[in-house]
Length: 313
Length: 286
Image (cartoon, rainbow over all chains, first blue to last red; front, side, top):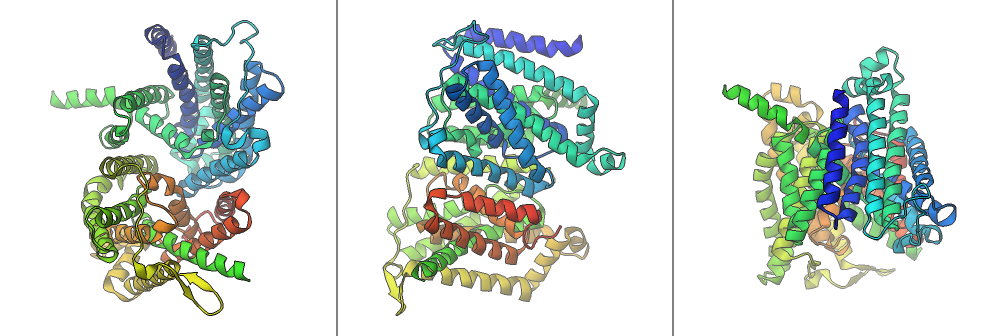
């Protein structure tokens, strides 16, 4: 029962946001989509201890796959999500065979390079992807043939929230499974896990593939809700900001990914609208404050406060 | 033949710039095992300060550049003390995050002060025009870049191989624990190395402004470029950084001349191949 409480809270927040900001649904949808992307990153960084700065490669490929599928094959949203997820998983599996053999700075650099190569490819294959103009002309069919995407984005928001729930629930189950426990073991000590017979390399590729599927789904959702895929889906900023949001919220427990994304994007949005020129100051100080003051992220804040109060007594 | 020559001269000049900016990063990352994404910011600061001194203060190129480099060195010492010290003992991710934060603040500070537009650095008369070598002409600026680069390499070689500071530095890179047991003040060595690296980055930023134009978003735009040199060369290796900078500089220039339609793909594919074969970089220790 206790494990269902956060889900109930999540649903409550989603409903309240829907009625509180009826004219910002496009932004809220973007937040929800980014949450799915950051969840995929938490699976790697937080759970398994795989540090990557190339999540954009998986996210962007999901977006282009879903966009192309909608334009050329079938404009059904759910089928598009599956195609996007599959594309992300395939890219993650193939690149993971090389990437997962490395660690540390080398891994960070290689993941960045993979995303850059994809961006350059998408730019060059402009007969397919539209190049720098972006891939337009995406019109989605109604969800399950019933709910039409509307102009203010109500359907889009509810659809994205439903996908977020399903993804979070699945990842919760995965993390609690023996497979998930072996991932946690790999994070803490790869050598010991190898010693007790866990195929560490294969597990790392497996979890990278799973994260690729989730990131691909996030990309597909982005393509469907904005009806456009541009080269910026492969930007380094996508990967870097996802990492900032994850660490801001706190790693390893999925809820931190959701909280971090919501807080970061809200601060970003407010700061950019209050002062369009100097908002980077605020983001920069926010990031530094997290590293120096709450290294375990916002999710560790209650515990930290409790400990401080306890010390005072 | 002419094409090969221009590829080599432009590639070597580009490689020298990459080397000057990246070498400090490589040594500090090898020394303290800290991932520093903000290093390009020092190159940007050098360029921006030179631009400001020349355009707003009317100071000539050479004194402007010297003042800018000194200012960056002076600024880098308290930055290292206050911002970097606390993150040495943290994991890789907090380091990445903290230095991204520092980068953001540098960008915001420069665009607040000088605006987000391009900051040109006009070359002095002696560096303009071209030199006739008899069989072909070379832009004078390229020759200056290569000469300055060679002086930097020579200076670094002398510093690390022939001086007491260099011996201590190499000891601290190889085994910080043992080095400090032997009475080497590793934290002081790190401060000095950090300041030297920042100064060299500023020099590279100023000299390379023709190839890598200075603006507020410079540290973010070229972050990956500089880190690639470090990763390919191997952490903490000056020779490795030099080889990597030259190889990547020439390769990138050749690809731009021969296959302009493929952009930066060659650069990144080369990096993937090299790091796939040698994850610790060309001259890095496993």
